[in-house]
Image 1 (cartoon, rainbow, N blue to C red):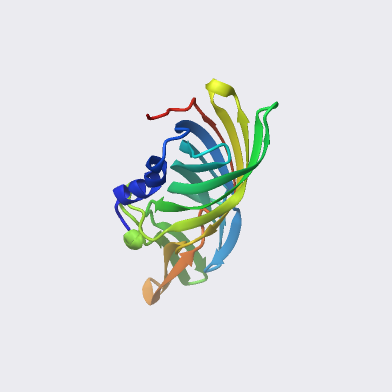
Image 2: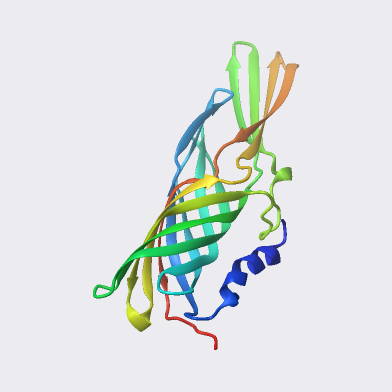
Length: 240
């Protein structure tokens, strides 16, 4: 599953099946709370929350049923030893099914539940991170580097990464001027997640190499957690 056209076609097929209410296009912001800490070869690795923006496409079958898709961008910082930072980036195509269970017509508010999934593309720079320490006449050089050979390399290549999403949504209808949408989703991995991190440890005594050991770790810094989002959709575009 490496072709963007497949995902795009999959996401719009339900949209073009019927044309009762039409499309709504929008823009938004989102955040995933997913801080984590781990230790690799004595070095503490911390990750921050993710922040991003989105292009949104909604299609309403009726006043109660809607399907939501679009394109999301998110990024987070990775802190190695409190002094070296890297940044991971993600592009996602969500496909979310929405059901409005409560509509307050006088106020323009409606509340619903979301269930769906997203195809995700992770990306990170492969820049060597070097730590060195000297204990009397023994010098240890530790090199950390992301092994990006197994990661998607093209901008819209999604490989085998995906997330399951479910949660609640609130919508404020502004009439012909559009809608203001808020959602809170639990995002959990559906396919494989994590970045492969290669750690090489070289030990020298009096300039002579004593050992050189290389290990590959799976650093779990995926775009999963509790995702909050706010986006504005413009007036309905109907095809007849």
